[in-house]
Length: 169
Image (cartoon, rainbow, N blue to C red; front, side, top):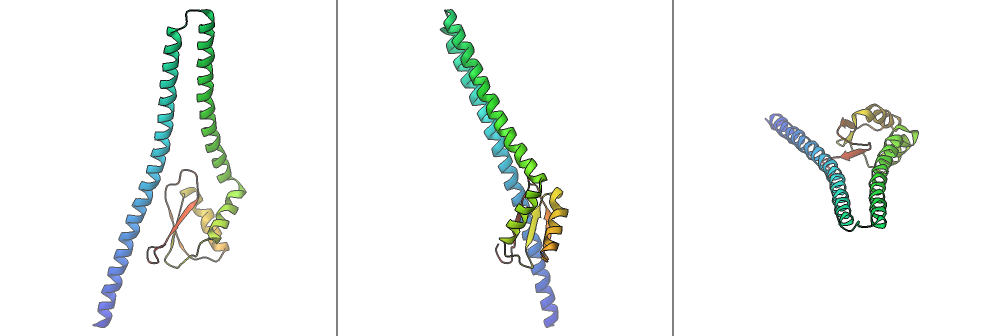
């Protein structure tokens, strides 16, 4: 009878752990999606703000463009605003490209190892990595003789998360 109760308790505990893991995965995906949405929202807002500013300046300058000097000033400001927008786009594209290049480099592996070393891995812990990094991550854990569950999740650029619901990590 006692064994039966223990089996029931273990079954309930396992079910609760599975459900909490599912909830955690859902929350982590939602957080990542919200992060990406915020980044896109920022880009769209910045573009709209710049376009509105450009339009306002262009309209203001058109009203006062009665001489050649006013027309030249309008062109210079328009070009400067266009350069500003191009520069912002280049910065964002450059940052994304650098991160993507880093993830493809050997330094990325070192980065993962350094961060794995910072974690106290427990038997019930779960690493979440990008699908592209799953094989590399499993190799790193094997090299370090770490036994842990590894699952895939959405990460725009790379990295990993570690969680352990039983130990509240």
